[in-house]
Length: 529
Image 1: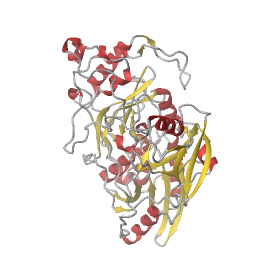
Image 2: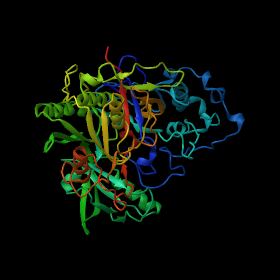
Image 3: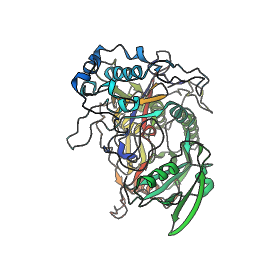
Image 4: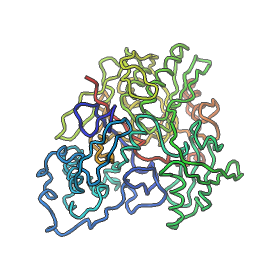
């Protein structure tokens, strides 16, 4: 990871640490090495990596001493950037790639040493896998995790994945995402599939094609999306839904209100606007601020500062924060957002989030409620050290779905740790108490669990998510920010009456946001000296 973040574990640049969502929030079939989730099923539906292309239990004689005892390896930095196929040229920021000529074995030794140093459950990684048996660094990384199961029989580690470093840099530093600018919800990973449009990014190919919230996907490039299961159909669907390069057109058939329509969309680098629908709503009990917030990236820092300056100037007395589709991102942005909600009287001297690591890793200083801007690099940055506007609220309402993850959950948990009343309207959040350091090597950025985050009161046990105060279904029939939209209407009613709307079983159809797990993370940035 490069400026403004650390590449690997450089001591001269800010360090990134991330929490990530369980694999259930994306389609089964997402392979390692980057890109978007695909349609299909892996043998292990909890894994975000392809199965290893090797015998998982080779003869014991095939083991090297380092396989059996990773402590015999040198420090991971010894093998860092030693690549079988080194890149040449410069990265997105104009810096020369750090790659040097090495071998595949160098890349595997880096991964094994790095996991042994930093993985939260390093002593649970099996020693039955032999580096000599692997032909891919991605396949080897896929097995460097705990095989343990939870009491419910789920995989203990469901949070292990990779991303190409170039895509990761684009996503985090510029809000650029290759695709059509549409976010989907799905009913399941297998046929029959129901996929519905939930978000359409302004100015995107999806917006130009006229897609709207609630539209249902029927066909991709002429093949049956709903029921198609054979390998050729699934491959065609994946190629159409998740383009790997910009510029290739694909056709889609969707349904709206019982009527089918066809569109053609061409994949492009879409710039995501993270803060939308900033409004001041007049109510019988005062002015209420509302904004929809979709990702804690570098771009969002300035947009959030501007939104809260608007709210403060309008003298709002309450806030509805819509994070129903927010997968997470920068923890410093989450801390700044929380400070702007609560203000200094309730946060001074308190911890926003403390990170708990393995017994080999030095503990980091806790993240405070930040009262000044970090100043992340972005096309429209806020100046570092800028004093943040704040509302000084003792209560806030947050709109959520199972797609509310990571840094978004940290906002809720961090505010509650400072005794701010947080009312959750919508659905239980995704549940992400764990974290990691995105670490780049030879063109791939690796994500592996390294810590658990807790608030000022020491609470961070929400692996199944944070429960809703009022269970309300996501309303795809109305645009976000519409006062009659289900979640916002329920939030405005609850703040006045303290009563939840009647639950409707018919409306509570489980749906999951479709996105790569790298978009559902929390990132810790080392303070500047």
